[in-house]
Image (cartoon, rainbow, N blue to C red; front, top):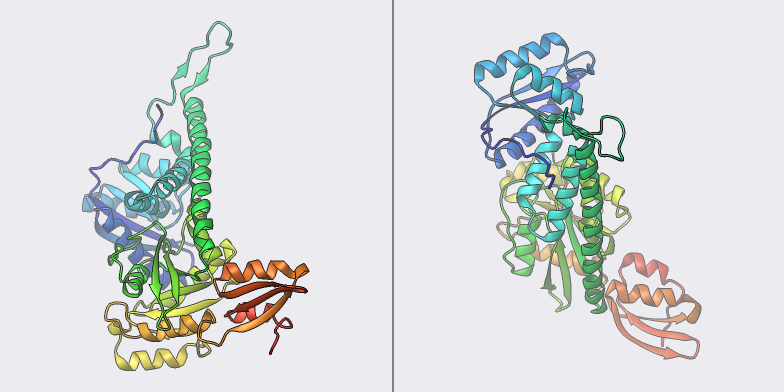
Length: 429
């Protein structure tokens, strides 16, 4: 049976390259190289050199001009590196050209992220999603992966011509695997959707943790829910959505869900592949956007997260920004950051998941955002507005309901957004 060829496991010494067109891009490129270094290190590969190369224009054959190309090849030979890793996306032909000239393995950021995801995936759904992404990535690169692609299968009695070339056969097999994997993912997603429906029958508000990878989402889940979900100081420590129940200070229960972290320059095929995993953000009543405040690029990380949320259709959800890791900052730096952040009261909180500082403030804000700290409000919902009753149930803020002559008599604790929709239906005694 056809399988996508894995990279040689003897790869040990890496040479990292980022290509820029303008000098003002250098600082950002260096930051991305640091991130790539951590990803590569997590795969057990040592980094011998990181280099930012500025060019006046990119070249279709090698991305770099001949002079810079020879410079990199010379460095790789002197250092004895066995893999060149580009932070930029390489086309299949560029990879082949580099490998032919350098005689070492050449890959890009996309392939590294795919490898990290493959190493971290645990549940059946995550494994299938990674498999799909890798198949789609490898399809145009089959010529690079195999040495027998020039062979042809001879035509049978009913076939004419030279027969089917091996590369055509392999491409067809990969497409068949892609199709089969998509069907499997749909089936698993259907099962998960059924489980979610059962969970939503219990009128508990749901809160989803989102944010850049390694921002501290799993650690926050463990703090709030007193659980033991894997949390580690590395990129993509967890990929699978994990839900736990927690008690708020007022005694109300909520469901807290951890989701996969985001990263800059995330391959679009992975956004698509993990869309089902990130659907938890679409059904949540509240999103907690966890930010690593100790990271110098935290603002760019925030932009990346919000951009991906927008692609998922979740940007309009109510968001509470959680600035984490304040214990790693000096007091003056923290004061200046508090002043510079343009947020309204109640839209943000500073805390440390590690020490527990600020967790109580976070829980109080969650209560407020979900409308659980206010007195219950009674509504009379007309029969032709029954969709609002369904929405109240889904929001998990329903206290009591009973049928009345003119509609449904509802007592609820609506959040700020739902409260606006229910305006005009309040009744007082």
